[in-house]
Image 1: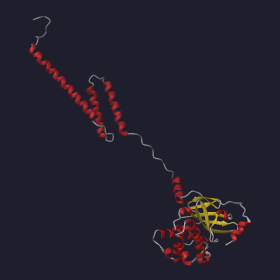
Image 2: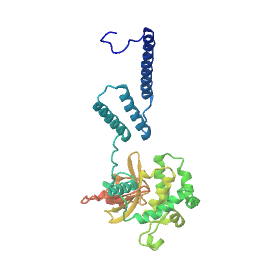
Image 3: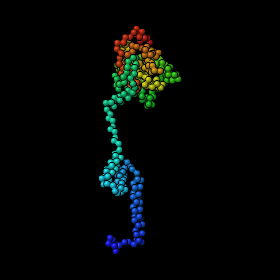
Image 4: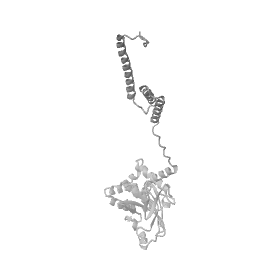
Amino acid sequence: MEHGATAPALPAAKRTVLRPFWQVCILGLSLNLLSATSSAEDTPRLSSDRTDTTVFSENSIETASSTAPHAVPGQVKTATRIALSETRSDLIGKPRSKPERTNPKLARSASADQRSALSPTRLFGSRGKPVSISPVSQRWQRALSELESAAQGTDQTRHGFRAYSAILEQVRPLRRGLQIPKVNYMVNRLLAYREDSFLYKKGEYWASPVETLSRRAGDCEDYAILKYTLLRDLGIKDEDMRIVVLRDTAARQYHAVLSVRHNGKWLILDNRFSRVRFERDLPHYQALYSVNAAGEWSHTPNKGKPVNLAARLKSATR
């Protein structure tokens, strides 16, 4: 034996056996690492499921530590914190925006405007502002409720009057520009003017079309309501019609007419005149309130506007 040797040397045959054994072990470890890495990469991320996402983050942390056996412990902890923070951010998602608060006062005003339905309207030179209630609301709503119930088919009594059906049959074939003056003329001929105090024993009463037709009489607003109903049955929209309560500054009387919009202009259907008039023909008419099935308007009177002699003469002409 030599003095520098501490163990007997292995035979050459055994050395040839041990070298392939270590190669097989190293190859097996490398295959295990590759399979673990591929399984971690193939795992899907589900941001909507908290449990699956947490499990995936733990697997990714373990894979990172196994694939980097020589990494510093501090770096592993930092990588762990980053992975967990990313997982929490995926779970939480984007911050939700705060819901917009609605002002109850604005909501009430919006519903009132929706009920009034339409924009301000100019009639007889005065601007009408949409309102939710006016001095004529209660009387108009009572007459309108009967009109609406008949339109829905629950009450067809106005169509049972021969005079009403005859007007519709005679006017329907005409074009719109002729229907409006024809209805005005025929209703003025059909009804006799009578005060509410005589017909209904009341100071002011807005009659429904059925009440007016059954008596064949009424005052100015009853004429206007019946004309409104006929033109509505002929297909004219509510937004193109207004029953206008006004003051005749020449005669110094309160009055009511039906105003119908045709070709961008307001035509005046008045029980005082057999022919339809334009607004410019009636400068002494001062609008106070106007109504239709969609809403009501309050008009600001034009003060200090003189009425000439020609207007006075027109108001006296039948």
